[in-house]
Image 1 (cartoon, helix red, strand yellow):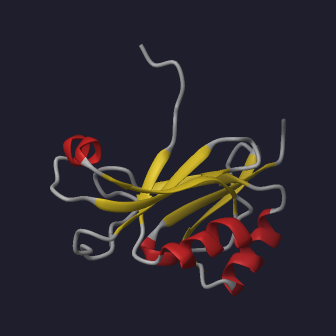
Image 2 (tube, helix red, strand yellow):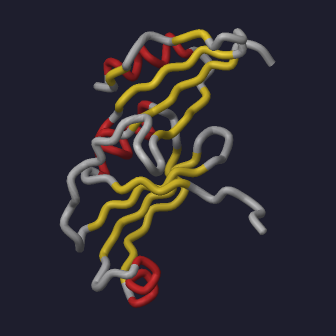
Length: 145
């Protein structure tokens, strides 16, 4: 049935700020950015008179995140969930140097629950941080192939 994982979508209040974070800080690149409206998007989302800007961002490995900024519908409060909340909770990213990534992201305003933690099997180091608009990020550095 499923042939590929296509992308994960993230609604943002500040598209330009989100693009700076995801591209300039994390290293994604914009592969497609467009304004969308019309009967097809209204029907697909089950809304009326949708106007949304979407930006598809590619990680270095080609996997995609889609940022969506709605111009037509009032913003809901930012997600304030926790790692154990029902539904999608976080975005996991593999990094080459976790300590360096944490330093860079801290300077960009990401707050971390704890310093990087070594997995019990010694396979990886990982940590969780909260980025712009409350998004939880899991950062993982693989230590053993």
